[in-house]
Length: 250
Image (cartoon, rainbow, N blue to C red; front, side, top):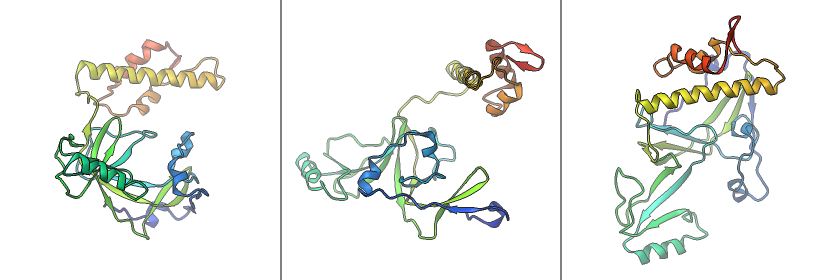
């Protein structure tokens, strides 16, 4: 597992470290597992909250086919295959109330959780990271007591303990991955830019602006991948929703 070292060059001489001690609910881990973030700020590791911190490293693919964005829910499921349907049912009953309660025991005829390979009968279980977007094999790594997560926000540095670390294998998409430079890909890119422009105008209007406006540089900065978002296409899309006056688009 890759462990970048937090040196003085990263933090700087004036950097202030603030240690966050996680709030521990009275009901223990069961209460933590039942809590769902309600605000966007609660997704930040720089917030004092009761949630666990898990680090995922995609060690096989340099650029995974699908990556979840902030707020996307995923679950870690353990699969094990038994010699018969009766054995799988009995194993599920015996696992209730134990550490294996979340393990899915499969019968010999059940399909494998991943297309890349199958789990043999009575062999070690397989952990899989699953979401609506895709699934990938996962391997738990041992956490060290000297490992901490350093988070920077608003010029301040926050230090949090790391509860678990996982190495993620090749991602198997569950949704269609749009091929680049196709007509559908171009429509998706244009719709994404249109949605961003509309949201920016609405945000300014809610803030009290009587005439919301944007500059070309604002759009260029928001969509800086020129191979995907050429400047000519961005300006063309901006003109569809606004009129140009005195260097701004209203």
